[in-house]
Length: 293
Image (cartoon, rainbow, N blue to C red):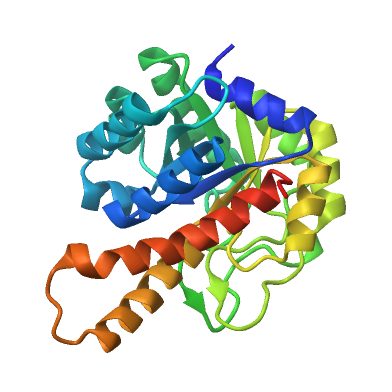
């Protein structure tokens, strides 16, 4: 069995989830990797189309490979690379050819029929390049920006009638042949600065999992409560995405460092405090997802 899929299946059996953290710079990658090495657990690194354009596809692949070459341990720490929120088939092909471990084709804003059609095409492209790449798809719209929000994104599926329906999820999975599904279950991309996000619909997660059987992925985890996270894991979620919170912490701590050291210009002197704060958040999350003490 594919190594990443084997790890996900093990997480399912043990009622835990794998942390998926997006990166937009080296500091975030260093922080996430430090936590993974220290706790000796696997972690998924996500890069959206925008993050890939900024970092460079071959460069981020090389970064992940270098961390694994130096630190990966059998049955413990390893980084896996996911092409997060890939909207075009050209970008799907690019990620598959570059050697990503997983690819999310995101047709969440498309009609149900068009999402199926394009997802099937993405699956065909990926399987033709490397059958071992895990393929994820999104069903239901949960917003598209990792940002500090003032209101619910327009069109996001929050009301019960707008959430992903179990029968549609089963039809979608059967029709496309994907490996993992990211449903809309009350989750939203981005986060509010000072209050939790709306509660997840745990019953809907449980019903979707029963209908599709394949691993479920929770996007938009920044801002959700610990109680909701654990209930979602118990109900069938195996991977949880965190992005906005890391961006927020990076920005906030960098501002503090610049305030305290206004004359400093050496990045290697400013960034350790930023990295440490990101590590704190990542460790808190992975300990929760893995039910570590």
